[in-house]
Length: 211
Image 1 (tube, rainbow, N blue to C red):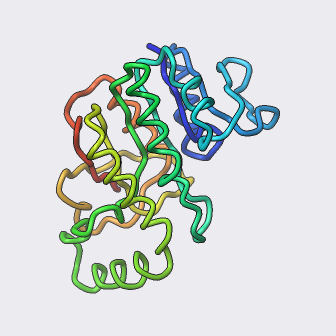
Image 2 (cartoon, rainbow, N blue to C red):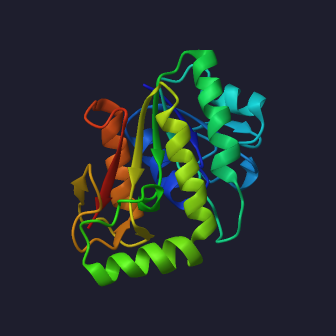
């Protein structure tokens, strides 16, 4: 199995890279600064930006599956997903790679909070998603639309707030965040994303996961 990873130097991307290597997969990763990438030796590193179509294509060539942990690194407007995901999709079409598993956010869908208590639903929808995390949420909505229209075998994994704590398993729901959901560890997210490599259950769908 050959895996192409975007966002490999980030917190969740590093976990995906480690697990891919542990599974015996061949890994290629697009990294802006290879000298600071701790896993550069066992990985085929492509130096460059996710906004560079040539570097994106070089990362994907020969892969069986694409894992993306790209996303905003701040609350400011960055347009990372709006710019990078179309290039990934285009490169996948050009190289014949069909499967992509992308890290998203529960904020990508308007009805993500419908199973929560009314007060939690109001706070998240009106304060968190529309004010505090306005621009990251806008990017995640864009990613959802791009993947949905791609015609590829895509899965978008949509957690609530991510933590750096130890994994403890997760609840999974295809309609909305499970009741009383508010967070999940990156460890659990990475484990779930890895399981999707050999699964067709969530192909062409978004899936919510949380503690």
